[in-house]
Length: 201
Image 1 (cartoon, rainbow, N blue to C red):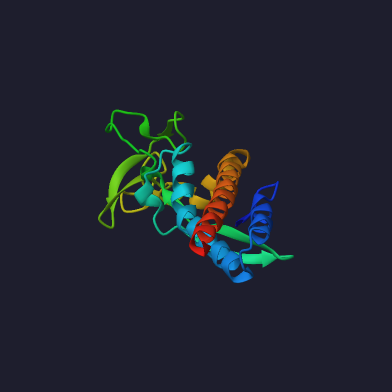
Image 2: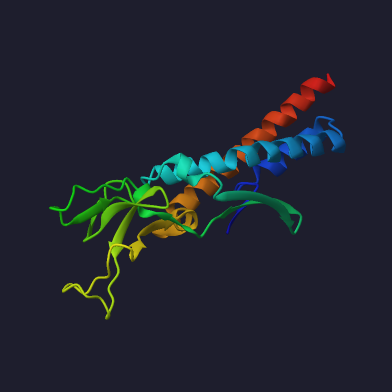
């Protein structure tokens, strides 16, 4: 999905490794520090993605579980980590969905913080044992004057997918996440190299 280079624009990581060589650290020690810093970023990546998403969207962290994977690789000698996000939409009710009853225009939900919307004629029902926001489907063969099918023919309304939340709205979440991970990658590499220097003494 989104590929985030392991280093910031100024390539602080490369400068840190150069400084480490000047200080006499071996290639093996530098490589080990490099690997440890990448591992630290990998552990932080998914929690950081969830946090960045929840600053813009109303979804709970628990509803994002299992919707991301982090991979690493190299392009032209430069390491990167990539965050892959599920394209399957979360149920609309996950976005603070509510329904005030039959006398209301419909169920409401706010996919983005501060942007609640009314979904006309929608209501909350239990489907497969779980609460969902649904609407009755229209059909040419329906007997009701409204043209809607009976209660057994319902359509579950979906919200946004993890992929859409990361890449949507001019990639605000993706850009913020990339900056944060690049900065953390560089600072963590510097920290690991400093620990390696101390172990060398």
